Image 1 (spheres, rainbow, N blue to C red):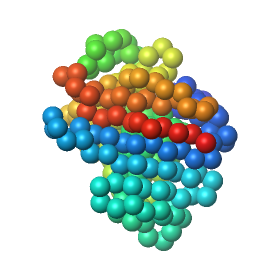
Image 2: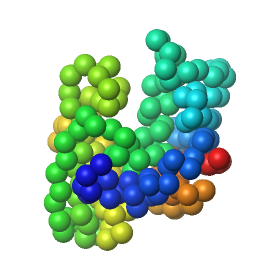
Image 3: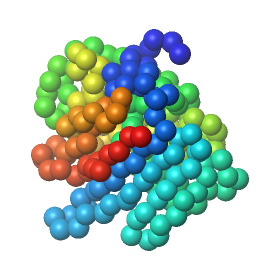
Image 4: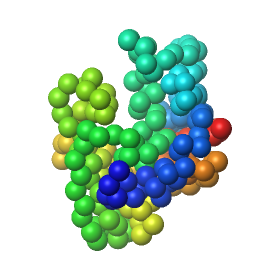
Length: 197
């Protein structure tokens, strides 16, 4: 793997230790409004390529190598990007990237390195392209190559919602960001119950 900036970001979160990991479990939580929290529990057994899911609709375990995947796999991919985006930068191949130095981050206005990731568009089933090909992420990095904020832009459109990347936790040999707030400072999405085995 070339030592590109995306790979350096993955390494900052412990990517080089990933071969020590058998499974990762976590709860993905989103604040839908002032009262309701929507949560999904996941356990990804990396060595045997299975996923355990428990959510409001059902509980199931499925194989990532099956010919057809349950609809919940879309949630797995989405939630995994929130939980493990730095590692996706090393795993995914279907994207291009650009780097811009000394850019103020959209929420805090901190001087950052802006890393823009654009996924190739085309057939979503192509390996490494995910479920939403053509999407873009602007990652704002600090001097340690850690993400402090990001902007997700659907279809590489000009506008997107900035979200913070806060509260780094170390579990086993890996680092995870657990809190995401919107521009108004409200916690909108968070990762809890992380366990690395």
